[in-house]
Image (cartoon, rainbow, N blue to C red):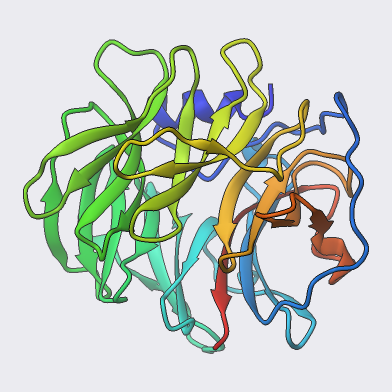
Length: 325
């Protein structure tokens, strides 16, 4: 079932993201070889880990490739179930979603290394579901969904605009094309499954950029001004997620070479033009593990090769990466 739980929850109970996984690992299908000659990576990775989505025990971790240090940064925050963190363009802060007592999901912003608690950006909105936050390319804005509606705030939490779309609920928004376009996942009217759309911020025009009969597609992550990664069922009969490269002009999507039949691959996280980090249920430490993939050759490396405690028996998901200059 893997991501089936997530696919229904995001549009019914509005708990979005980044991949809500099942609680035990799927071992069917081919067992791909994992490379040992790991590439040198310079940058910082943030991701979340939970034992099972319904356990509500998510924690956020940061791994520094250069320093080879792994840290649970969320343990002292007093924020429930923090997840889906996203780096600012300068790598100095993250924005993420979490819960607080007697309220719904809120968005929080935290400066890396700060002794201060994260700032709640959406507390004034009341008991709403504020989810899926992403920084703009210029770092001055944050796009997210509030009760299924796309909204944009500044880094202090002030509402800048509501972005109307025709679908009843829009999820997982991500900026593209110099922040003038938003890529998002939604179910078209009358459709039981999600597809990928773009909405123009200046004009409000909405375009379908990926749709396949009987196939669920979601979690778009911008690669550059013209393309984006996303997760998609292998077929209408095979609901194992595979990673694709999609295009904002609607050109046919391309299956990425890092996928393995019979296993889920999802939550794409760009590193540079050659590599991406992603989560997969292929054999590893257990549950969803984090892997590095070569977009040209299809080679993959478990991130356990970089640090033995990155992957665990739980679920490692929702990676975001800051590439150090």
